[in-house]
Image: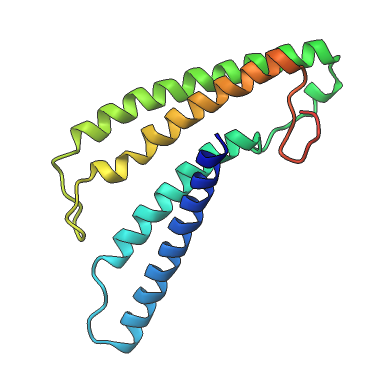
Length: 160
């Protein structure tokens, strides 16, 4: 499992670096050459879309999303765990529904090309079901871990 985690981290870093290079190339071509890169803005948007959605799934794995714990931190531990599992159940259902409909939308736009790069729009739309699928799986794993081991932990190690 560690290899998939490392691959995910490497992919996120690579996507960010490619987006950075594309944006720098866009700036340089716009200011120093008479013909700006027509595809660079679309490519940067495409890359940032994937970075954001994969980053959301990555944070679910780390349990690193922002959480307001004003009320739950004052609950007794057993009730806090039940509350955590209820919240994770809602996240799981929501992510599964988003994944389902995301696949449907990505499939429907598969023959629609992007304007500048002329690739299938489904590559852009696929970020939603891919990340929602990962969020679904990771939320289920977090719930199983909480059921087996007790109190869930935030990314910094503190109790939720």
